[in-house]
Image (cartoon, each protein chain N blue to C red):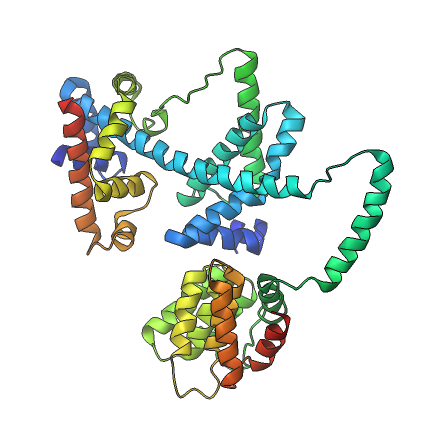
Length: 243
Length: 197
């Protein structure tokens, strides 16, 4: 096992210059050692190929699904004399469909994020504290940096629920849904706040993520927001009427 | 202000952030990257007169290269992800055409370890490359299956470039040191199984 560690240290550039020279010298003189190095590299290459092949299978599924979606949309009849009539009918159907089609919950969430969460209020203050600095980063769309900053504020003050809320919103912008949910659930479970948007944001994140079961769960959460008169009630009522 | 800030849109920056995460976020980000520019495939079929499968393979390979470069921070963000990915994809397609026209196209990918040999001197490089060329990769793959799920998963994470600290989180190990010891043991076990045959 020591030799594998030694080989790994060489390829990860953890050896000193002298040690690296000795390593190379040993490679030239010791056939068994050279064989071990070749095995280490071959194994890593084989494993990497396994990982890549697995990803390619996932990519193939995505590609086939996207393609299938496109094929479904293609008209079956392409004779010109039917084309005009089909276009007219399609136009009417499209208009009716657009008119009556319910907006998806993901679209509702995206619009809300676009309209309400692009900038967060920075309070006027003579000194810029770390929360203000993080907010500025957020407003410059540097969501990764703002998230790090909000999280470091939370680390030093776990009761800073403004930072928790904004960490969740930053993670939501980054589409790091699991992390956003972590912060919003923490906020949601906090009692004694004058206004707590945790449950509303929890629902918003699930609507945006839109994985299996998310729609039902967000429906339930929005109903709780309305019933218990929580922050975000007005928006929740609007959304539920479009459900 | 860094170069990345100047050239990258916030959506590109978010995507990169997510690709550097672990678990579900990263998986979703990988799929998002693939999906976003998968229309390159149709363009390549028209432009280079290659088959759909060839275009898909070239595009998948380009995405895999992009993912690796983002993971190891060698993507400098001097252009948008789209422009950069297209350049990699274009090079893949040109490479494919060249191989086809010079009749050197091989259906099976070779297991090249050349990427990892750059540290070695030319003399030792040749020796190792030759030795590695003798590896029976099918046998090695079969032996990997005999290792057990835990060992296999740990080695796959390692090959993907996930560090021991992150593996510890993913696989609920106490520390990165414990992961390192276990991982080296798994490699040793694999070597033993392979040499036994």
